Amino acid sequence: MDSTAPNSSSAAAVAAAAAAASASGNGVQGGTGGDRPEDPSKQNLAQVTGSIQKTLGLLHQLNLNVSSFSSASQLPLLQRLNALVAELDTMQKLADGCNIQVPMEVVNLIDDGKNPDEFTRDVLNSCIAKNQITKGKTDAFKSLRKHLLEELEEAFPDDVEAYRQIRATSAASKRLAQSQSALPNGDAKVKPEH
Image (cartoon, rainbow, N blue to C red; front, side, top):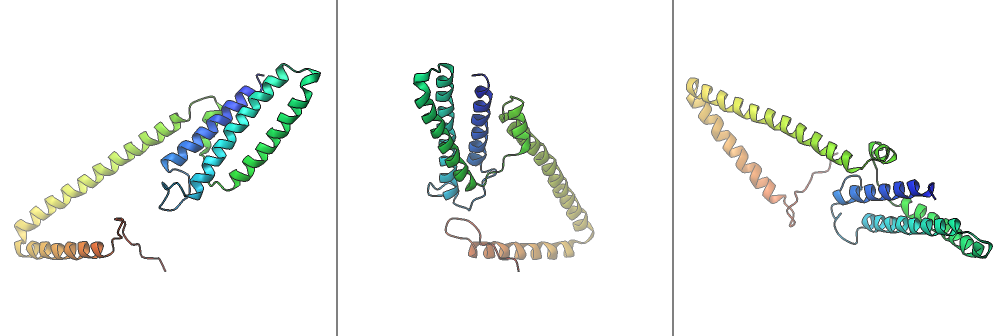
């Protein structure tokens, strides 16, 4: 009884981590239509998750049969074992079609009995910190650019005015090019690399 409980909870935790990775878009390799119900990777993931849940149910039933085993319950036990083997085979076949990459840190946290949400929280906090650092650098460069333009305008007013006109023309042509390359859904066309 005790030997199946950690394995089934680990399997449930792995299934939850895979579902969370899929829901957040991390790890599932798909196209731009990831939210559409007809997306094969999402359907396959749902089938794998269902198979995991069915396997956990079969393991629970097997646990009950084994804990109250008698010679009369041998046939139901064998039927459940066969159902478990068949479901594990189905799960393996379905899992081959899933392209989900679960970070080893998540698997290690699950093995240690910890919540995989801790990993997600740590990754998000790290991203927020790096984003703040990058934003600070960007703001510093913007401030430097503004200061340099002010200083240059005092020294070379005609050249700075010509520079601003060139920048305005360049920005207008760039906006025009972007509006012409926009797709009906708002995405921009991407040039293929040669």
